[in-house]
Amino acid sequence: MSEINKTHAQWSNRFAYILAATGAAVGLGNIWKFPYIMGENGGGAFVLVYLFCIAIVGIPVMIAEVYLGKSGRLSPMRAVAEVAKRYSASKAWKFAGAMGVVAGYLILSFYAVIAGWACAYILETAGGQFEQASAEQIKLSFNQLISSPASLIGWTSFMLIITAAVVAKGLQDGLEKCVRYMMPAMFVLLLVIAGYSASYGDFSQAVSFMFAPDFSKLTIHSVLEALGHSFFTLSLASGVMIMYGAYLPDNTSIVKTSIWIAIADTMVALLAGLAIFPIVFGNGLEPSAGPGLIFETLPLAFGQMPGGQFIGTVFFVMLVFAAFTSAIALIESSVAWLIEKKGFSRVAAAAFSGAGLWLLSLLTIFSFTGADWATVNVFSVDTNFFGVLDTLTSNVLLPLGGLLIAIFVGWVVKQEDLADELKLSSATFSTCVVLLKYVTPLIVFIVFLYLTGIFKF
Ligand code: PFF
Image (cartoon, rainbow, N blue to C red):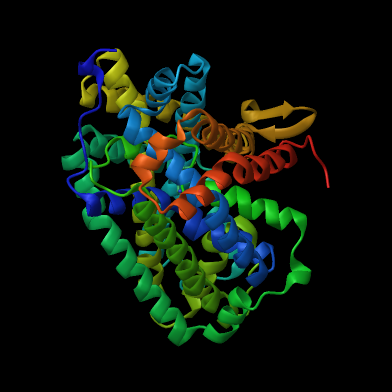
């Protein structure tokens, strides 16, 4: 492999990396998905299991991915191939990296559509559309949005164009500059909303819902859902952490930064819960409303509360910032691959990758609008392309990718090399290796069997 093909760009410093990787991790998963799956799975007990999964599975896999990126210094597929070659392991390991890039790409094709809904909601909330609106009116306007191809294509194109434009500007001038402003802004906006919720909503009921565990509500399904979500929320197995690791400055601790990123991601998810549930309870609404929680339930509350029009607008701006810093991370691995392997300029690579995503996003868009051609039958189940993409990525590619990465770093990479890089005390290092070699693969394997339906409880 020629040196020219190596990825030389690096984050300007450790803090820039932490902001970028936290930006990649914090997204719709934290603010849209976490609160509603917590709501559906009974609250506090689910939160405890989720925290446990982040610590036992999420952090070790993140360490493994960043390690691979840093030691390969290339886009995910090529970084894994490079490390495999070093240990004379099979070339086929590169597919573990490739699978991540494909998963990330597919995820972004529907992620951009949902982020587009949030963009549309900024205007709707700011324009006062939800003021004193009834639940039926809000439901109707949500259904109108998701069944209008023109609106969906417009908003998705907007998201994809700015995502590609930022990435086209390069690592330090594009991605890094963007997270430097957006992440602190997102965090401040979230705090403002949580403060508002605490004063106008039912804060104590929200706190007891989120933190008083009721284990009778916990099912095996909730446990597996918590595990699956720990992968999604930390952006694991989607090429993102290997790619961002490839840009890690030389003297940055992989372990410490991974722990910080996981803590920041978890804090945002919990804060999002503390921002949303007091409003939900304060207005006598249902916490288990499912995916419509922030697009149907919350606007109802914003429409009734003092200052709701303003705080609702702030909420959706914050959501778009969070989604955007994940979108740039999800597109970066494909862009880096086109530059390294196909010799594209960065601008051409971003445009090409963005155009491919735009085409793919039509599958999701027309699934929502209910187009006949987007309805498919998979294993005798009627679904649509969005259902296929969501299930394929969250239930198959992410767990399988995580499993392979843990096995690769746990079993193929020489332990002395890993120890040299991680610089941990011997007890902590052994714990980390045991987690990567045995615990993570076993747990993820069980989740994989369950999610793919091979295993039924
Ligand atoms: N982690 C981000 C979120 O929680 O929204 C985005 C994301 C990245 C999701 C990568 C899934 C993924 F594989």
